[in-house]
Length: 257
Image (cartoon, helix red, strand yellow):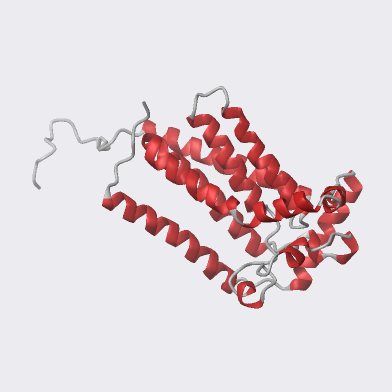
């Protein structure tokens, strides 16, 4: 029987403050490092040419396949905008309630990747494929939703040039990775379908390059490695340990001058 997380008011307050800090970090960063479209487009064109050179430019094939199937394209657009965020927050709530002893591990993994990804996006802005006409991908969000990232008032509070790394894919991958680690059911590997579906949706809707997905996984590898090393170092330092200070022979430690 999994240990239930207590509805401790102090703990929940701290968690709420951490979530608020992450939101403020995102918004303050967006206002402080407002990217120029020209620079973001230039970076996107460089990445696009790299994909062409490596034979990785497969995004149009995903979009064309699903545009021929409007129902499935609509489902991918809806999945990209709505349930994705609810599933991420829902997983955090599940980990708190049903895997409380390891909840901090889940929270730290999510925050470490999120803070690193947002910080990188401010210093290296990169436009999504739908902003690059030469790439030939249609802006499916603009034609499918009444409100989206191009809506003027929403545009003011978001970073439209934050394609690299893909936070959408990063969160989905972390949810699947952590869910597999925290559960023992033989069905737990089905969680891998979640980041796979997100990867398809963000390419079919023209919101990310395939290298955004690949580098998102690389960011996660970096943050997870740092967290593992940090935990091992912390375990090796005894709680309340004091440093032994050598004293001259025969002089008591409490001797006064």
